[in-house]
Length: 21
Image (tube, rainbow, N blue to C red; front, side, top):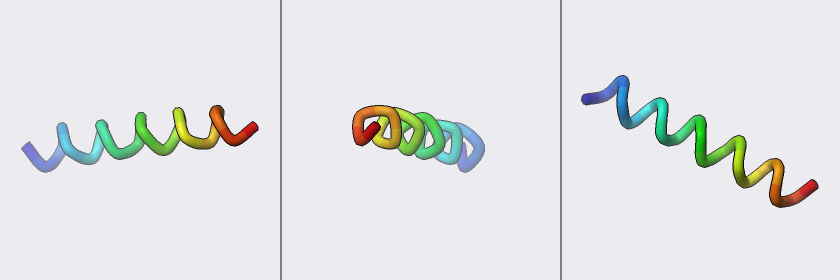
């Protein structure tokens, strides 16, 4: 569960960074 949540957070961060660029 924690692993899945961490993976989602990482993906969201990647999307946010891409959107900012």
